[in-house]
Length: 396
Image (cartoon, rainbow, N blue to C red):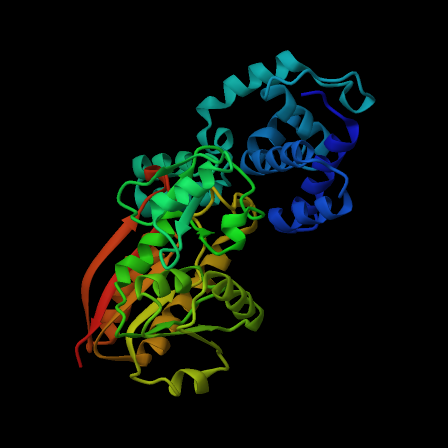
């Protein structure tokens, strides 16, 4: 496409928001789109795709640009590697295309740089998964994420949803082994479509959809989703429960639960009660109440780097260690809400065993009234985001 200086400048400015002002990529893009309401879909797509691809491959592009702060030149490197013709602009006068292409080839031997991972994170992945497994997953997480939809089966079937979207020239394919999921054949803005506004689907990764199925809630259950956030898994469980039974969706941030209420109304779901967690009092008030308990705990997010590539540059070892302490406190404290013979799912969107099975083993060692039942690991190399889930049972 023909390049316009204002679009390239917006890419560079958005990168500055992310790497200098420490904004999250989605928030930085939201800001630039609000400042440029006149842009069409093509302009917005160019800026968004450029920003996310540069963030995903920032270490490589910054190395080739020989700067981590000259975002115009880093954007120029991206243009070169995407085979765009470089305009005769003053900002690009020192772009040496043969040098960039040759050096990129030479960097293939330095995998952490070529695949754009911080050294500390690359070493951590090797220590936890082994070099072969980590490299496989790290490379998979550097691909752009597919877009998956979860059918609201309270309103229509997967096939009916596919037919409704087909009428809008939106092509989808069913997802093997994820019964309510559809994958978009190409990326589309589906949030303004009539099927979305009528509550026929939610955008939710296929791997994430497997967590609610893993808990296996029934229409007779009282289910607690104790780290519900904006409620993607809550809404899925409501569908699995046929809008019967009861789900108590909890979070420490009330604004996320407000968003859940809006989503539930659109979906026609009415078996959900929201509750803001206000310290131990909230948890103690629900002691031994739940038949099923979902603990989708805060984590490093290393399983969802496809979707949130800027996390690579915002994380550090200290933050991950603090998060592990939070995880153990949540499973220890919140498990008291489960009835005897009830089941609990501990889940994360991390690929690190230290956040996953190691946390479960530590909990079981200190809580003999629980037993391990089974576990499942969804790896990014399967094509979804990465998730871990463990099923535990309270036996006394």
